[in-house]
Each structure stands twice: as structure tokens, then as C-alpha cells.
Image (cartoon, rainbow, N blue to C red; front, side, top):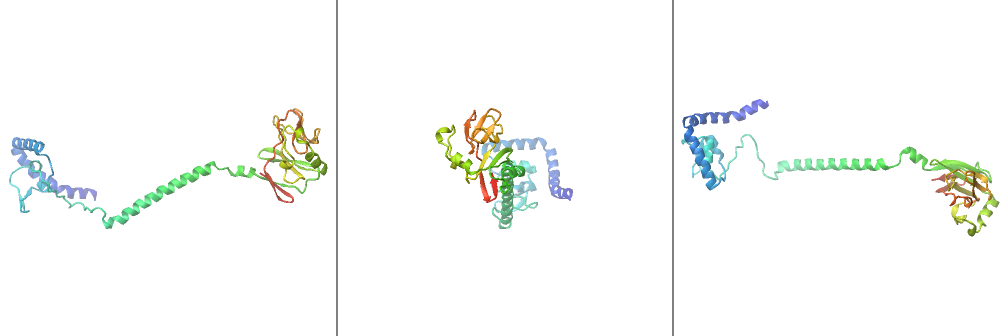
Length: 268
């Protein structure tokens, strides 16, 4: 179908050129002379436009009548020698629409809007994927918090749970433990911090079980203050987890926690 259409379009043009070739062959030198004169005239006067009727072997009279030419010039030479501001277009092979044609406006807006919507959707997906790539994975979120059942812990007992890869001490303190922690003067502490600031419920103390000296794990219920003792380098902590003796420079860290109910503790 495409070849047939090309043949239909090019057939009339080839016939016109075949008619012009004999004239060029008979008066080849004169045609070249005319062509040279035409270019000289064009350089002097300038081109303004060529009427397409020159290619059809006809010309338009001042009255607007289309008559056949008998000068024997090829169409291209005639068009160069006779520039004209009256430009006409051969529209037998296509159709032109004025700018903003209503028949095309809606479709154009639809295509432009659809393209912008696709671009916006692609940008949105890319941004979401980038944001989600920076969020924590499911296994990390699972380690972010830990629920502990407190109902099985006896008075004075300390248990160790694992939270975020670190040991956490949960101690159910006796009245003596609480009194000893509260009555300690701040002047005796190397890292002064009151017991009230380190716990929510006086009965329960929650601290990270990592020595603040070199990261060892202290032993519960040991040391000079019956709190924790680090056998690695001899650091002592009291019943509030505060450094009292040895090379430990600061108190045991208190993690973020809260009581969900009377017997459930949420660490993290």
C-alpha cells in the first residue's frame, strides 16, 4: 500500500520533469545562461517566494487567470527568474489545519495531559521507592521493641533480656534496695544522678547491662553496694546502676521503656 501511494504521488511530478528535459537538451547552453541570469537577478533583487504554479507549466495573469506558458523554460528556471510574493501550496496530498482547530484541540490536550500524568506518576513511584529504601526492614523493626512478662520475676531477682543485640537488666528491687539508692548523697557519686531520674516505678529498675568502661557485662547482685560488679576491671555499681567504684566513668545506661500494664514491660 505504501509503494502504491508513493507511485501515485510521484507520477505527475515525473511526467512534468520528462516534458522539461527535451527543452533542456535542445537549448542546454541557453538554459544555463538563463539560470545564471536568474541567480544574478536574485542576488540583486532578493528572493521573496516562488509560486507553485510555476512547477505545473502554467502562469497566472494579472487578472487571476491561469494560462499555459510558452517560453520553453524549465519550471525551476522560470520560478527563479520570476519570484512572486503570492505563495500557494499544493494541498492535494495533505490537509492543513489552522492553529487551534477545534477538531484537534481536545485530542492535543488529552495527549499532553496524559503525558504529564504519566510523568508525575513515574516521579511519585521513584520518590516512594527512594524513601522506602531508607526505612528499617522488618527484622530491624522486630528488634526495635521487646515485651517482657514481669509476673515471673521474684522480689530481689534480676533477669537479663536481649534487646537490639545488647543485654538489658530488669531488677525487682526490695525495700532495702530502694532505700539505699534514695539515701545515697550526690557527693559520693562520680556521675551524679538521682534514683528518681533513673526509674519510673521504684520497684523496677531497667538498665543496659554493658559496663561503661570497656563494654563488659557486669554481674548482678554483686559488688560493694550489692548492685552490679564488672569482673573485667573491677567496676562497682549500686542498686540504682550508678558507678561507685573502679574505672567505670559513668552510670549504666537507662533504655527507653514503659509499662503496658501491671505485669508487662515494653522496652524500646
